[in-house]
Length: 59
Image (cartoon, rainbow, N blue to C red; front, top):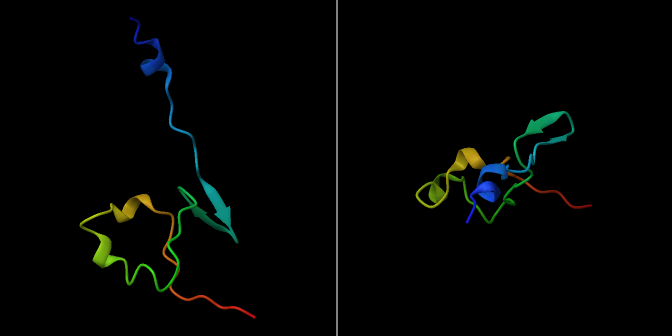
């Protein structure tokens, strides 16, 4: 069997720009569900998420 499928695979570019802020990906944990982020460091590479939302506002 050929490995051509494995060799041609490329990760999709998930980069986004929101309000002039460039992020490598659009994943942003919501405020109140992620603490300060440090609590999740043993489970998740924090460099891989786009941002952490620290405060929400609803009108």
